[in-house]
Structures are given as structure tokens and as C-alpha cells.
Length: 441
Image (spheres, helix red, strand yellow):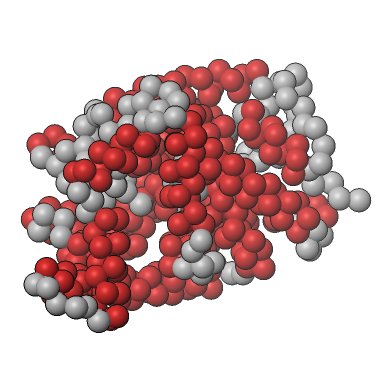
């Protein structure tokens, strides 16, 4: 008989909940740009303002948050794989976790599809679930091998970014030459036509004109059908990527690292205080240096496409360093018993992270899309963060209150009931199964 079920309250790992909650709040720092502005995530000159306070906001986010929170999510997801499978197999024997593991992630995949097409085109649940389908065989691998795979993937991504920089340079050079030839009245060859089309596609994606930005703004502020249509266009581009595209390696690499770090006791707070102090010190020293330099290079070159592409070579090292430094600070606070009110709120947010993640999407899509308040493209970059602060305040207040009365967040309740093919108890009465500390977001 398989006795696998959701974890009890006494079995939760508070430090992991805290890191997950921190990542959940932090991811909104970057997602809010996608919710409210057109193609401004990497290039603030496209929309939302790129001078003064708006530029400084981009710089700070580039250095401390962009990619770092996704990195944390991916590492926590990797930790969740080890936590879920090891716990199930301790109770029921080797291999007994497969049924629950795959059912859990197939449901997550479905949730991700619905979330992507209905609420948020930049959502992460679907690609996480896809990655999870390949990770189960690695659950028992020793940490050094997991770290080796993660590091190897990072090297591959660095090489692919360098290649992409070269391709971007060639696309621009050949494309501009073809445009100039056409302007001069020359009949373009098939090769020149292809170069022209590639350049125009790249330019439209990376550097849209003011008219193209305004057209997109109007579409996002349009009817429900118009919003669903433009969102589907965006989602399809991401979902059509090959399974082992380097965008998925972004997730895979950090999941392997997270699996290793969990096995090494880093996320569970088992290492000494000085270990986390050293991890934070080194992480910030490396990450702040790299990310400040890449921000300087991009800004000083007015976000030139080729310069921006090549500056991404150090991206993974920079984001991992800062992410680990953030983890170190959080666990030092946890071990020292400092700022308990904040950590308790973060732990509650992390415990019901799926519900909070979906709540962010519901709130933001309602604020920015045409079926709500139609604020898309109407705010400057720095003004978006007033909304972020408001959402943070709500989630930090509501999450602990909710968990005083209920075992799960509402989305967690649905997910776990489907995963275990059994309706889970919702209200708190006595010690009862609670949300698994291996949430996948």
C-alpha cells in the first residue's frame, strides 16, 4: 500500500518556505514590466521611460533582481524534487514516488497552460512542469554530479549566448545592407530578401517603433477577445520552442544546482552561520561586480542590440551569485531569529506560493488589460512599483491570516487533491496534512 500524502505541519522546512516566499514576491519585480509595458523588460528605451528615476529602476532591477528570482524559483523547484521523492521513497520504497511525482507535474503542466493563455503570457508553471518530466531519474544522484551537470549547462549557455551575439551582429549587418540596396532601387536576391526579413523581424521584436508600441498598447487595452488573441500570439512563440532550447537550459541548470544544494543542507539551514555569511559575501562580491558592469555597458551603449547580446555571456554566473547571496542573507536572519515578523510572512507566502502567484496574475491582468482598468502602457517604469508594493502588502498580510484557518492555499488544495486523487482537508482543526514544502513555482 502506498502511504504517500501531503506533508504534516511538523515536517515542513521553514527556511525553504522563506526562500520560496521571497522569490515569489521578488519575481513580481520583473513580471510587472511584462504586465504593464511593451517590450521594455530588457530595453527601457522601448517604453516606460529610460531616463532619470526610470533608468535607475532598470539598473537596480538588472543588478539585483532580473533573472535572480527566476534562479531562486528554479533552485527551489529542484529542491522540491528531492524532497518529494525522497520522502515518498522512505515510506514506500525505491521508485514508489513515480506515480505521485508525474501526476503532480502533469497537473502543473495543465495549470500552466491555462494560466498562460488566460492570465499571464510570461508564466513559469508550464516550462517548469516540462522540465520536471525529465528530472525524475536524477533524484538520487550525488550532489557533486548534480552540480557538475548544472555547471556544464551554464557553460553551454555561455557559448550559445556568444553565438547569439555573433548571429545578431550578422543579422543586423546583412539586413541593413539589404535594406539599403532596396532603397537604392536594386533587385534583391533571395539571400538578401531573407536577410532583410530577418533584420526586420529582429528589429520589431527588440526595438519597435513608437507607432508599433502604441499599436500594441491599444491591443492590450482592447476587448477580452483582443487581449486573449495577442496573449496567445506571445505564448505560442514560447511554447513552440524545442524542448532542449537554451531557454529551457536556463531552468534545467538551476534545478540541478537546487537539487544539489538541498542535498547538501543549504536550503534547510543545516550549515553554520558563517557558511551563509561567506556565501553571501562572495555572492554579492561576484554578482554585484558582474551585473553592475553589464548594466554600465548596456546603458553607455544606449542598449545596442549587439552589445546587449554579448553582455549576456556572464548572465548565469551573475544571477546565480546574487541568488545565492540572497539565500545566505535570508537563512542568516532565520538562524539568528531576527525580523521574525517578516520571515513568518515570507514563510506563509511560500507555503501558499501557487495561490499567491496566480493572485498576482489576476490582479495585474485586471489592472492592465482592456477587460479591467486598461492601464497597459499608461504608467512609467517607476510607477509600476507602486502596484508591486500594494500587492506585496496584501500578500504579506493575507497569507499568514489565511493559514491560521486553513491547511492550504486554495490553489494548493486543488493541486494536492488532484495529485493524491483524494479530497484534502481544508480547515485547520487538529494536526492534519498541509501543503507540501516542495511547491513548484
